[in-house]
Image (cartoon, rainbow, N blue to C red; front, side):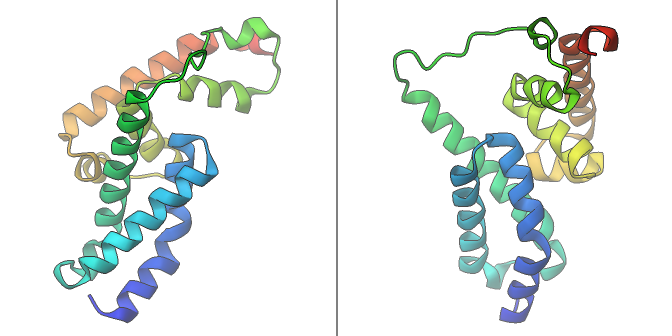
Length: 161
């Protein structure tokens, strides 16, 4: 990969990578750190990376960096930092987007990642498998389970509206 290829990768994929990580982490500063770390790793390994595979490499690297950060944060817990689970439609919300975000936030990390890659970023099952290291069948199962969870979380549309 040349310097020009690296610059094109930054221009082409920085925003999409940031959106993916931000949607998973829910906080801008850690998302920016993950994206920056991913591009730093790309720069360090630029000689070993094919410029045609840079998108997959970046998303895979960001995914692994994000998961490592989540695991590290889970090891350090602070008193009173636990979330109290509540059903969204019982709170009387009428903003479906907010309820969907709450449902996605409650998913296990792997289901959240594959759902966001598929439904928010538009990746194919095969691409998601490459990024996450899962088989295509596992990706389909996790997406199915996450969609069922979101459906059950929301309940009926009448309860939301």
